[in-house]
Image (cartoon, rainbow over all chains, first blue to last red):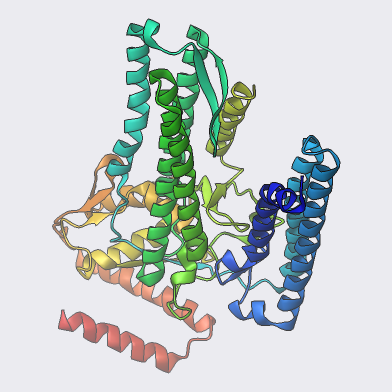
Length: 351
Length: 128
């Protein structure tokens, strides 16, 4: 293999690691202005000497971890000509593990400088309701389509292909099993459960999480942010059901490849939009808009700024303090029920 | 229409919700026909237990201010003021005003400022 071909072959290994590294470096900037490494602080703290020092150490840790991860991945790939997948895949975990450790350290260093939590809460009573019915219909379509597909398959068993796609990636379908009543039923049931789970998460974003801002510009941005998260979940649901359709109805390989490319790209574009908007849409809000400080969750219930556990909070989803989007309130039984379903799906689809 | 709650106050949250909403009803900021958020929504936004909001809504329904409409929330209704027993109400007013004045003075509120604010409140009442 000449040098140019080698460099091109290594690119797929390097760019995801670079992207992960860049994302982890940007994490502190994605948070609400009043949050610094999972701690509610005065917005000026970020620019203070102490704040900048904490941020610098976090960035150095991420930078070193990313460089080591790239070096490990490239060395392993060159040494074993692509066969050494274990070190290559393990190198992906390194920046994430270092980021978690560095974030937890930064959280501990910031805690002594936490701002006094505001005890006064203001809620706008006349806010426009969320478009729950429209979203429910949008989720019902893929779920109903799986039921319809099941009924069709039962009446046209002889017409379906002899092998069934059970896995797909950016390049299209890449894993098949023999078509049997059990494999078909498993595919349809697992896809239905995943769609229901995504629908439940969307419901949770609307009805199981707290609105940090309920009035003014901040509330509008937050509303858009929540809607984008729900659309992301919807896209994921449609992405999940399509291979079942394609595989059982015998769609062409080109159509499946196109689908496998378009949907992740759409999701990536939406994710990029979410990252640009910042947590809760906070980057689109002017600093003097009167938005509440932080995310109104009590710092005491955040473990290392990563895990939220508050029995007194009725919300089962809360805004993440590491990354963008929502995480579970691990003190809420509903969160554990959903985690159990996720674990069951993972186990059912392991092989 | 903003509802303000102080989670650190010694007054229970359900009491604060009742008092806060009643002020909005009396001042007609929330008029008959207006919808209140569902119990679940308001509890999530305030960060308090669902029962706390449900208890406040029930109390307001018993007072005749709202009609609870299941999961969709509650609606403000036309309310007939009950026959007033003026002597009893006056005694209640005196007692509660006395308690409020004592509490505010204990927290450092000056008597002159208190008198000015009370006059302003009385003036606003007369204008209505």
